[in-house]
Amino acid sequence: QKEELKWRKEAGWDWFSKHIPIKTERRVWVFRSEVLDTYEKEMVRPEEFTRIGRNHENGFSFKRQEEPHEESSRQAIAAVKALGLDFGAVDILEGKDVTCHVLEVNTAPGVTKGGSHRTLVRLAKQIAKIGEDQMLAMPVIETGIAKKDGTAVAFVLLAAASLFAGFLFVF
Image (cartoon, rainbow, N blue to C red; front, side, top):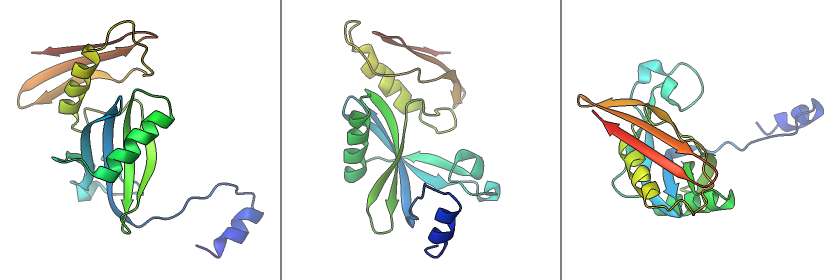
């Protein structure tokens, strides 16, 4: 609240954030200036909403969008470039005034809880096209086992200084 600013400053607070009424929140997966996929956050388990936060533990999940959102895509690509990365899953909030705001760039986004398995495969295919001599600015993504429709998919994505290797095993 506006009237609280004076009190908080006097108490030593030096960091503030602006409240933005939310229209929606998206996660945009970007690899080398290309949008791989866009997901929109939605409430799927309202009975689990017990505290502040729009996350998996509070009943939210990501739903893949058929078409990318133009402004979110533009801002996501710019955010990944600004950080000097080759890859990032960028969380973007769209306010009720339709202005988009970058919240964060995830360099190791969750895959198993976020339903992003298809995007992970697309990322691995893009990475497989890269030669060993090409430097990547990318950390370890994730390892794990995902199950969908009775098919288990084990994935290991490893980062090294000059080589990024993706291994995908379907069984």
